[in-house]
Image 1 (cartoon, one colour):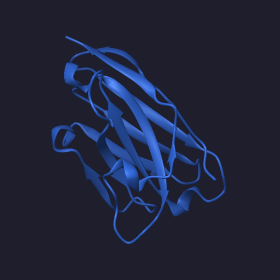
Image 2 (tube, helix red, strand yellow; image 1 turned 180 degrees about the horizontal axis):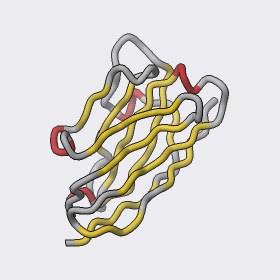
Image 3 (cartoon, one colour; image 1 turned 180 degrees about the vertical axis):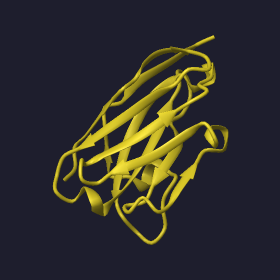
Image 4 (cartoon, one colour; image 1 turned 60 degrees about the vertical axis):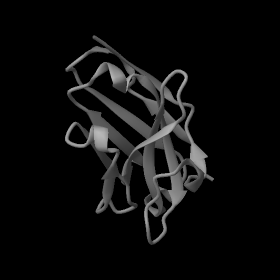
Length: 125
């Protein structure tokens, strides 16, 4: 069982930066792939980024490549999402998700077993 809690959301102007954090409970954090998803008003939840259990593999939504960086600190049971050059279209509730690691990483909601409650990110133009 893993419990996830996101933090770091807020209001920022276009071009600004935010760093989201996701703190996980449990002693087996290093056995989980971790991902970030987001859901904008009136839209479906979409994949943003994923990092493998070791941090050696990452994958991003095309529209955030070069602007967002996912990372993890297994000693602190925490995964991060550094978001730079933010755009109004990045406005959404951002969710952290976890799943027991497998050979391949997943970019679909159904591939994840545990979810945080989400944190709001609002980017003003």
